[in-house]
Length: 427
Image (cartoon, rainbow, N blue to C red; front, side, top):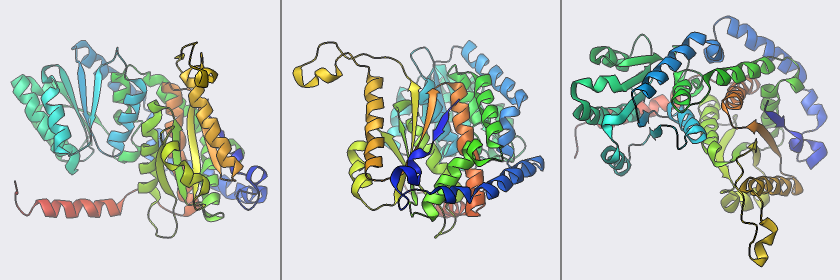
């Protein structure tokens, strides 16, 4: 079970003027009880559809069957096309689970012509599975990339190209749904009530996990066990409500409106960007009232941003994410004089020391931070982590009085882009 430690955000650790006093936490106990009850009642009415995805055994079995079929066909490369939640979640799963004995997993989520041209030329399309993840099929980036890849796949496999494509899309409507019916392409559904950034427990997350030899049942089990905790009406027993309350109080009572999500470990590098999108699109809806997420990676960003965090304006607080059990890679036992202190140590010990150093340094200057610790980075704990952060957004929506669903400002930008491109072709 993952562990959430908020002690270094509290007044008793970093003084009442910089941290959260007990009385402010106590002031949210009654509202949180009401919010937890509201969440369950809303789910009973069919709202928060994403929260029921881990319980969909039929969907898990469908994805398992699709993954088994792909592996039986000797696929060497999976080209995954998606943007936003349909790309960031799968990219995180790729970084966590891809290895020398799995398929090569390539996520394409850019329109950069140099990058696309490079991939299009080096991919062996005769041994490739193409996955397009788009609920509606009307988002510019993934559909443009898909048409490019579809053309290359058709050249390589001719009339059998459709056998090597899976589309994850709306089960009943939309351009992509119709395109797949016309071309005989297999589809896996995104439930109609589930938005892209909340879709990690649909085939958007399940399929990459299955293709990369992850354990789908453990992934769902981790999510369901976290769900049980996140339904608790007692603040200290509900990790999603507790994390949301810390975020809210640090922002509204102490002026820490920038949340730095910083994971220690490259296999979790995309988590910060995934959570950044989740919070920004879900809650960035009032000019004067919402948290501002900022993605960072340890240890790299210690060397670019720590000076700002330690001595700059007090606007940021940190949410660290780390794994406790890691592969053991030992440094040589014999090292030159100045480096003898790390001789024989594992790189995991070095990484842990860097996290501890940053954590203690922030505490020393009274800068708040919390830590989520995973026992290990596996399917079970990743399911817990995803559900925790999704449920947190529900509680944040209630605390900030914002609707966490929909993203009208993003849709406006999409429409302007479409109008620009509709004016005529320019080479």
